[in-house]
Length: 119
Image (cartoon, rainbow, N blue to C red; front, side, top):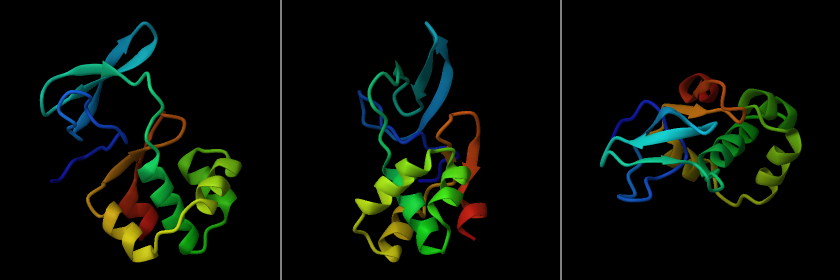
């Protein structure tokens, strides 16, 4: 399936992956599952799998942890920790990232186009 944005989370009702932002409630970002229509807030810790895979892919391309941190809007120590705990090969990482077009950055202020970063 092809989606414009991945928010690194699944719907709690249908486990769908097509999640979009849907306003705010009590200062928290609301999300809407396009598959089943369920609205929810991301009150739990977010899944960082895609960010970790992207960080490892960039590191394998020769980027330093500080360069990756600037690109993804994360602290360099977070990037270092994620790289240290990874055991996937570059091909496995690129296979997992193949269907992802955009990624929310660490600060949540903008989207990152993966095609531009990985090319």
